[in-house]
Length: 126
Length: 342
Length: 168
Image (tube, rainbow over all chains, first blue to last red):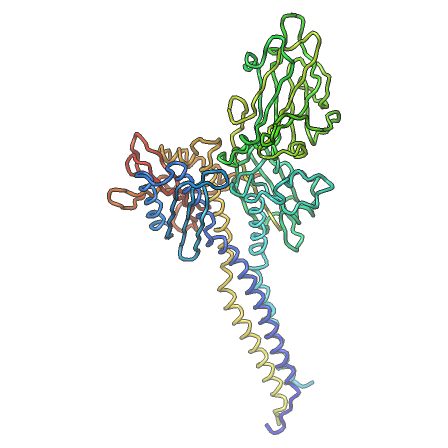
């Protein structure tokens, strides 16, 4: 190898350049794939519909029972137990006595929802 | 040019060709609509179905040509608390594609920097409203939302009310009264509310023969002189009805329509027209908004007839309220909203 | 005599080729992990549609009346429930879609505090178990009923309607 010349090294350089370009391309592609996945997951995993449904159910419950009574207590337990068993969500809510909020008698309602990923807490006057 | 160089270069070129041929295969699964278009379609669906748009009051759908730029976002929902329940006046405004240009749809409903092509349609029963380009064969992002559509109420005053609203030698004045504090009662859900600020008020008097003065058997009509609007603010110290200044003499179908006896002629609010059978007045929200009413106001629509001798016995006050006998509120109708983006 | 100055060209060609092929291999093997993102989107669309349908069935058409969903569940009217659900689901502007469903109702037996399921709508023959089905749910409150149905007696109770939705 005494007379080794370096004339051919540009070929290696070209190969390296192509490899680099490919890496950058891959980086961009990876990002775009992630965009698609996160949008779908964002929608699938954020339990928007679940929380809305729970809220409307609690308001429906207040419409029927107001604060606790025997029937209401059983329903409350239905909601908590079934949520845990079927939807893996810890749910809790309390309903207070009506208060005068700018001329209307409204009940303070606290809602808690936690499914292991998303935690949601709300205090609302209904 | 030696043989060795040729061999080295050939190996390099072969490898390059292999790698280049792999790249499109790498992209094949990604260049399809799968990623961005579906996300944009979903977002547009959410904006249209779950949001009332912006500005809220006065609502965007009432903006006329000169104020179109004030519309920030076109949403069709009745309110933020009622997702998937659409207001028919918003729907009608949205699908008016002679008023909105493609740029408006892209800037106020679809958003995004890329000028997407779109096709938005709403089908309810056999009614189909559509805007945008025809759908391509495939490769578009898509979302479908099931919705309910809220239609405005209508007060039909037919002959069954005649005993209640007639009196011999009456003052020939018939009043339809809208008490906003009752109509906008917050205990009524937004999906079922009568809100004259966002929906048209429709008053239709039919079977007018029952309201005529039959002491003269030849009388078969009465003359409608004027229709006037009066308001009262009960929170004022001495509440009283005052006549609302309004261009009563000009016909403007954006503000109201007045039809007499079912003819297509649009009358002004000073018609001086003989009424044989029916009167139909539709008061558009654009008019109600210039009346400067608040949630306590009482609005009167007064129909004045005038003939000497009197030809009608009509009198009294009809309350435009939640009593199903007074105002018929149509049931919510089911529809499907589809958004396609490509 | 072969001089080894030329062999270098060949070696460098081989080296360049190996670098490029290796990169391509690494790139392909990493990106292919993420491409299943595609399957998430139809799921998302289906789930949104199903939730919408249940929410709209649970919206009374008039103020103060019972919603369709509540009426069907309360009366155990599975045929009408299925009919209306599929009707709402498969409605499109031009054509009809081909979605299928099964449903069950989860309730709590108050005396023993056990969660029980009642099969409300059986899956039809397009169900093989291999479909990528989505599950959507909705709470329903049942009023006191004189005729105790299939749920926990006649008491007022909250039950969870679960619908499995798939495209055949």
